[in-house]
Amino acid sequence: MEKEYKEGSIVLGTVTGIKDYGIFVKLDNHHNGLIHISEIGNHYIDDLNKYVELNELIRVKIIEKSSENMFKLSIKNVDYRITKRNGSKIKETEKGFNTLALHLDYWINRELESLKK
Image (cartoon, rainbow, N blue to C red; front, side):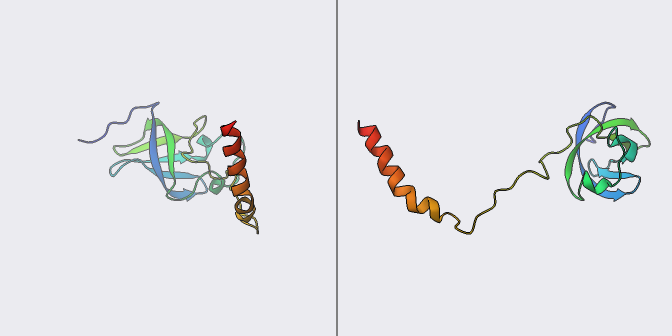
């Protein structure tokens, strides 16, 4: 049974192409769509690569069916990211976990003593 997509619904899709004018998205094996550059945001867009990456899974809003298997899509006003791309990453210091290892026994013993009281 083929999936039915309705205008206004938000669905998952995979980024299959990034061009100057828009982002191509695969919704399933039979349906694709295009997010025109005007449907990215309400401001000037200079580089679509700042918004998505190839093969990234994103949420898209279906604006309209443009042909049998093709849709006009939007990420304007949609929390489209499944995972945050530029989140902060924990960076290991030169000492790594050595600082923890040096103090771990002391901290454990201190907690055990406080529990006995």
